[in-house]
Image 1 (tube, rainbow, N blue to C red):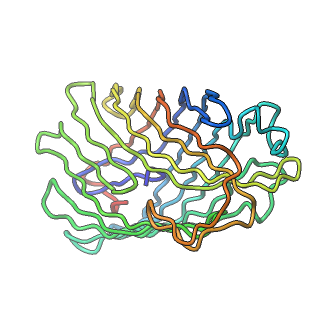
Image 2 (image 1 turned 90 degrees about the vertical axis):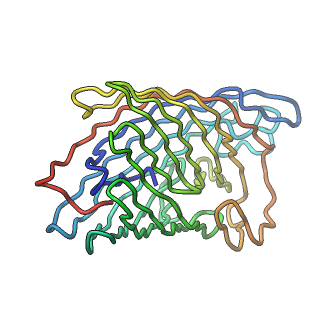
Length: 309
């Protein structure tokens, strides 16, 4: 849900560029002996809406992520070293293309349909096997001037099979514009309060995706599932067009390694059906993280409103 913003009635802006850099600390392999490790991440998100008319707009853009993570503790390297460096680390990349349509039907109803094809792997010897296809469909109802509801579904092919989740949420902006709630459960949530040039907030983001490991003819893929909870403080510069955000929180960050070809029957939200896979690496505990984000936000005037996304 964070791959593209929501814009339109009641939320008169679009985030054109978002860059985030973070590190999480003290993740621990419990077996065969406690080993602590850190994760470094970089995310870049670009969105460019192309207005067709007052009712429709194309949604275009791309999102890129890079995660440097230790998947195996040192003790395991003699068995599972292919595809990983001498310390058990690998770098996981994901590039997502955004292609969709945002439509407004009347003052109450609107929708967004977006295809999200991606390439996700260690980006060594990239092939069609690293390509996955996803998409999201949302229906939105403007309840009042300050409140709208959203209902939808997200789905994606992954290395472990097909994953999908329903989406239920709402967006609320107080009449004075200081208190904001942006909820898209179970994927994302943001609650914040603005006073002057400073915004204080709490957010949540649930990640579920996979990456193929191709280096050294590895026969492995990574199944990433993480729940990130954070508090943040944000400085709103240049009339709230440039947002500088510092975050501190906790990430479960579970990077599970499996042999390529091992799949589940179906993944629905936090549930897996028909999961008979054998995990190759030890369990990986969560840890605290810090993250810095920079956002370029374009404010839409009443004369140039575009359909909400």
